[in-house]
Amino acid sequence: MFEKYAMIGTIIRICNGRIKGRKKIQKMIYIAQKLEYPFKERFSLYRYGPYSLELAGELKRMGELFLLLEDKRDLSYLIELTDRGNSFSENFKNEIISMIGKKEFIQFENLIMKLNNLKAWQLEILATLFYFREVEQRDYKLLEDVVAKIKPRFNPEKIHEMALIMKDLIQKFSLDQ
Image (tube, rainbow, N blue to C red):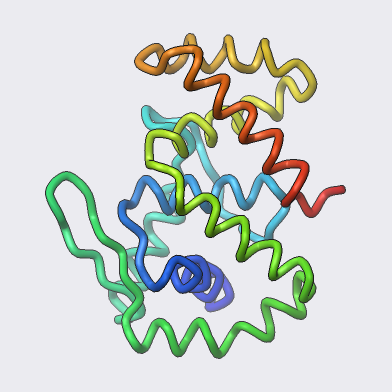
C-alpha cells in the first residue's frame, strides 16, 4: 500500500512537487504503466481517456494522510506534495531504485519530466492512443483513425502528432525492450 503512495509521491516530486490537474496525473501514471513501470492501478476508458477510480482513491487517501494537498484552481486542481509527503517519497527512493534499477529510475524521471511538459489535452490523446495500442500494436494509422472517431473534438493532425510522440516514448522509455 505505502509503495503505491511512494510511487505517486515520486512522480509529483519529479515534477517539482506539484502537478496541475487530476487528469494530468491520471494520464501520466497510465502512460508510465503502459511503458512497464510498476503501477498496478486498473484503468477504464472514460470521456477524457483512461481513468482509474483506484488511483483517484489513492490520491484522496494521500490527502487524508497529509502527504499531498489538492488546491482547486479555476477549472482544475493543483496537486502538491506536503513536506511530509516529500519526506515520505524520499524515504522510499532507494526501495524504488532497487525495484526498477538505477538506470531505469533515471529513465523514469526523464519520462515523467517529458510527460509533465505536455498539456492535459495532449496527455488525453496520448493515453487514449496507448489504451487502443493493446488491440492494434503495429498499424499506427489505424490506431489514429480509431482515436479520431472516439475523440472527434481533436483534429487528425493533433492525433498524428501524439502518435509520433507515443512511438518516441516507447522507443526511449519502455522497460519492455
